[in-house]
Image (cartoon, rainbow, N blue to C red):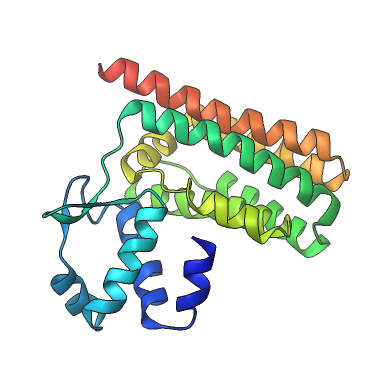
Length: 223
């Protein structure tokens, strides 16, 4: 994954990769939907070669499957896939939080605090509110992961970041889930501010596993 990104850095393939990844995670393409190179090339204003390179990277991220005679399709996640995704995230993001406790700059701590204040100021379940909550949560995790200062860990986390948009929406529509997430973010920040790798790591692990448990409960109710 990392080596492939290096080869295409600065090219239109990198741009297609970033934009298409955001579109898939954002729910513009449904699970199982075919991704036609011609249509994508037209959408992104490029040739088919950068599109094919981007699709190969997305396959490495676990967001796309390239099937014989069918081409690229958006990957469908079954419940076991999603639980596994969260459990891997719990390991990797906990490590990122532990590293960040020793490396994070005061300016990044201030940015993390600002995300919490933004969440506290949001009420209701309107589409715009949910979009802002999702984006703000992503900002929190991105800032922390970058503060860990480990390019390899960041690359590994990108492969498990593709949580489907419908689940994110269900999560942020739930008031108790919101409150638990905000409390977890505050505790993670406290660990970072204290320079305690153990505290930050434990708080992050619990935070991600709580999201896994919420997912499991939602799936059980749907069944």
